[in-house]
Length: 425
Ligand code: GLY
Image 1: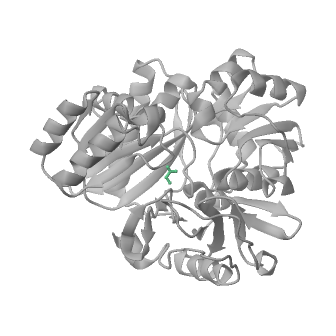
Image 2: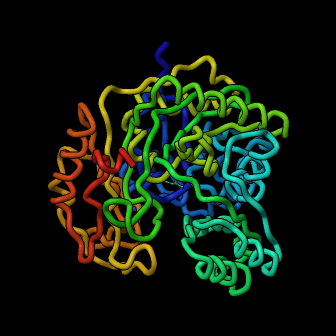
């Protein structure tokens, strides 16, 4: 049954993921009006920006009412952790995104690991510390490499893979005693390092059931061949092929997650990002995020055939089993263009040229603003140059052909996103 434009949507967020969400929402035959808070100059191509703090529950509820929003779509994690979805639900406004309790799966690594432990979800062995002395004693006794995670939200900077004991001891001191992560680092999770390729599974949930979107792969390291420091993500590709046995193993993990959410009284409605690592002992969960991955969203949403408003409302209203998730054939590759100095100290304020000559790709803006002189960089990750193709090779060729047309001083990007080598790791 085709439905006319009947839904006004308020989208929260302003980054590259939200630019991709706005692009997809704007293609919905059900969209009446699209508002974005705070949005961005790039998002303004499809939405009307609304100046408000997306982490302020009362302000979001009030704006949603004033705008007659029939759906609030929450992009980033901070509003979820701040309880914005709880406030919207209490006000009777349909919302895509879990409540504060569900958002703890991302907002607290210690909570998330306890959840995995309680519900027998395969994950690396870990210990949680609130006392730096005990943390230091434990890392001195642990096998290397090991992984140290700040408990709280740290914008992708709170995970350190430590190859030697001195690095591990230094990280404990930096996080717990020198406040390098603010309050996010006062509690630490220390876990065993697992080896294998990573897989990002994005599952839509409506409190009762789940549906998987095409699997994606993020490329987190700054440099080609997975070298250099970890970043928020230097690019992504989708779909990633998964064979029958792996799919069965993933289904079994998903069933445990769903049962765990139910047992813990979490009515999760939104997208759950399950970060898997495919070890020789089977898939293990590295992390949960309570929102679309960034840049995975940029590679997955263009492949989504289904209407995003219909899917988001189905999640919000507990009717996911009545809808289908359809994907387009082919593949999608998103290449991140980042600023000089990213991730440690990005240099911004650089003029971006060449965007108008990109014809065969989508360019999602993560950190830009429009000035009288044109587009200017404002953040670490600047653009996600994204192309669809009949297969990964074609998508990759088209994405990199578009990358060549774009320039800003000090621009950094990887040359192997979606490549065979990156995929086989
Ligand atoms: N791409 C990883 C993340 O969104 O956290």
